[in-house]
Image (cartoon, rainbow, N blue to C red; front, side, top):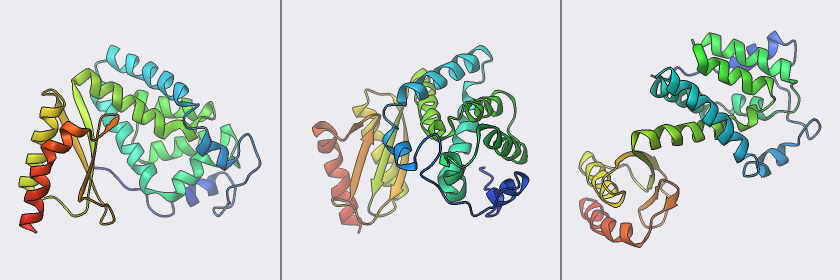
Length: 222
């Protein structure tokens, strides 16, 4: 189970650096905040290289799955903590300061071995702002090795267990019988009731056809 950081986690980390906890993101420094967002695609090659290096090392130690789980948990921590997201992209902190703070965070939540060392390396290279993409790249490598396809599903309302099973079956057929890991997000604002991204592609015509009956059943159940 993911251990959530307390609301003051970054504040306490900042305190260890003798820096104010309410530091605002600045447009000064090695890169601007806007540039971080715009640079995601150009630096995808960096994310791939880091992820591939980590995956090879994990393969040698036969711990690819445990590393994927640890990285996934850290990725969720980033997604769920606005303070941590701001921290990893902030140009205010030096590489040494980011490394010190990240080390404290990793120690606090019990991360060890190559996962912790990997994240520390990323911090020391001043690449923390790319870490979420590195985690996604590693997850993709691990899924491919296991024959698993990720499906990102957005629905207007929560799915029942029957609907979830029917959806997973439809996606498995479209993926050629591969194991499909379905990640569901509820967004009442979407039009059509369901949006599916299978692997790197959005729903295509064949999958739309297979999902039509499921959508109809969802409407009937109400």
